[in-house]
Image (cartoon, rainbow over all chains, first blue to last red; front, top):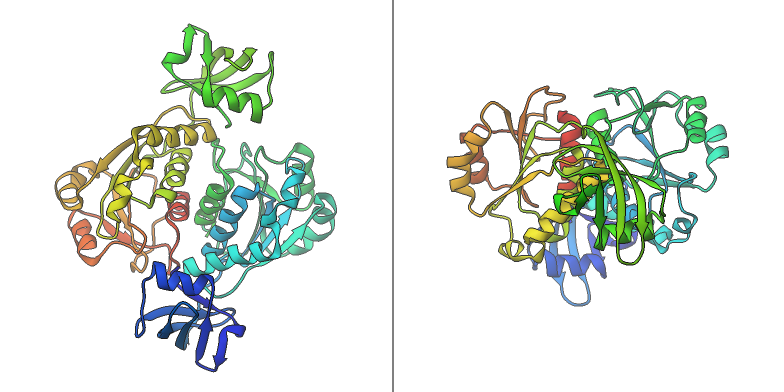
Length: 235
Length: 235
């Protein structure tokens, strides 16, 4: 945790917050901080600054906060991900958030197992927690949106072209002839398939929706590795 | 597992292998393959090809293999990593291996907790397993070397300059003024610090050894995210 993320409900007056639960425990037992210590803090959706601990015990953590600078710039990217297996989902969400992605769409695909949609990790609470962990990692405050699209075809045919308008539209597809472009200097809509990849019909639908298949070479990467490598290359 | 990695000991004759343990179980229960099915296989240190299952039961998996093509090209990179916390170590080793890194050095640093060196994950068996998992992911066969350097200064002063000779030498350091270069088209030696970063003295030692501090921007990334993003950008 490189930044303590604060929400409106945490504020007991304009410059003081009171925290309990995970954040209090982390500051007490991992940071091993005490009264008088200063931590990097940020207000969800707002500015970043410093919080000075005025109370820390088994009940609560209280800080006086000064928020005086902007969070890091966002990546101009919409990330459309075939729903990863639950074990991987958390890491991908936190990782993409830490890199500055602000718009994530989780979509079904032929090779997405139905059971993934029913995982407890798809709960609203967990989807929020993973994004918060990503923001805390990168000292950011702007939560990415997550849009859940249970049906591939209607989403790709009716919504995706509009979503991708004005951006470079690419689908990462191992074995595609074209290399993923570099340092593109423009907004990107990036689609990433499931383990095992999209099937031919899905790639055809995506091409019809204006997406160019691109690859990082012949290696098949895990989705969290692929996301980070693609973003490192595109921006 | 996108490739079944075969070792010399697995061969019962020139074209037949017999496997037990993790690989047999994976093919039986995850691939749910059966006699007559073909799998992508590769011989450690050698070629890639196809294996046809001739026996699969609770005791053994036997395949007839034809190895007819080269593994994917390697990245011309030496990755020098401050030893990550054990939880992260596995993912970083498998991830870097999957991207084609062939030379990994694990080194101590001020902010590496001493206990990390005693973790069971530092066993020879686990260090091998994680690299094998990375090769299986990326359909590669060439195992990266891992060199363990318990002492930072003697390593950086006496060995690192020779190790980095002829390559672009960079240390990833959040907050460095220079951006990480892109698509460099030459061998790279990349040093990555621990959680919390290298201390000033360590950066000074690395600079003296010829390493330029570079950054990916103001965001602090987890080491596995940083490695993939940096490699995506450098190559």
